[in-house]
Length: 608
Image 1: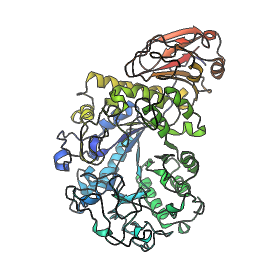
Image 2: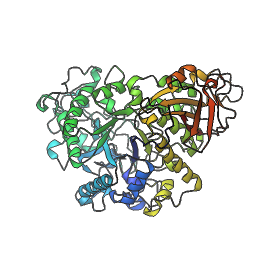
Image 3: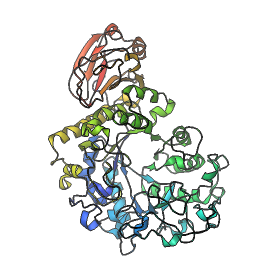
Image 4: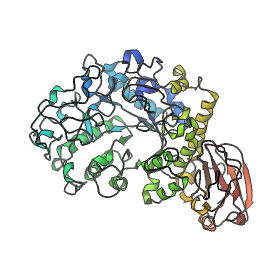
């Protein structure tokens, strides 16, 4: 080890997820189901140099502009009619029901006819401010109304053999060739909703499978009924064996038609200067395609950053092994760490089979190389807000402190902050299509009331935030700074909960006979620099943990490099607490910590 204060920081990949529709929208009407005229809409221009520089100061390296593509929408423009309400979710529409992969959403442009140029100008501003832009790549499904105006030659389904459920070169799957009930028209679950009839004329004869693999003429409200699934040369109804598909070196003429078209999509945005892609539902697409596409993408730009949303527990995954490992082997830079997210949420909610203990996190740290290539998040657009009154124990914005400190601190992989998380955005009340579900709507024209206080009319100075919110945002900024230190960007992980199970001073509450329900602790150490940290978090929502002692076993001391004599501990996240103890006291007596308040965390540098 050694005293490493003043050491230059190593950049950590910090992704800031933001919906352009919401980011700069200062309209405060917020009428549920309101139009763009009523509720307003954010623009590319709202990402000013001032806004971007403030995000850079906060610690952001990558800006994920969620929902940039032209999507199916209820808003019309002179050169683009509105989509039928039956194939929409919300007035604005889902960002994941894409209508043209080669275009951007006209809602986000000051001058809709100039939207591509306004998007290119945003890319240049981001580059100027040291931020890399990530956009969505949605490979599994498209809007029912998909038709590219920019590249009509690459639209889907024009040459399909629609009398077959599956053909190698078809872009879609056709229900009537799979079912035995004849060929009824598509019956949507929207009948009775505002402006809806429950039908969609283009699919009165040939009905296509929904994006979530629902082979039916009558998808339900729980289906992705607004989307249709793309075909990658594999019939998903026949199992997960995709080994007959082409390999990574295959020539374009030797791969399925959908592969070629999606490679063109990727290349289109790479050529425009987009630095990376967040891949939606990556596990639902054959691994052979990913190997082929990523090989070609990296030949065009070796630095292209690719991370994937994927869930190994989803029955729709296209591999018999662990799909997260398979995606990394296919060339992804990182994949979602949904299991750690679920375990943290399980501390507060009867989620996925029962309440969890902090000790349950230990089993998720033995995942091989994936552990340090996992993207960790405490919020994103699919998950409930930390400050929601519905879940996370209804504990409010500060539950994000221990959750984020542990999740962001445990590995070397990228971390992600969802806009509004840092100021306690609660997503409270009915916002539109999805109702009052604890999530900020992605389907509607809306504005985030707490985030607007940071935007402050375009000043981006937090001038309307409460002192509590300012403190939380400052805390997140400090966390992002600490996890950019070498111990976190290069170092290994050593869990301490197992070695403290019998330690009565390890945060027991009430009559608990074992330790590790609410307290979680681990070490991080970079062997090259010798820098080391102790991370300790109290997940309890109301109990201050007093008299906490963290034992550091002899094996952990050897892992730390066999320090001798007296070693120091210096808090770097929340205050200036310091301590120095003889190394021989750590295995038995342990390190005595200051009281750990509810929903708190410490990141303590270990020095000689």
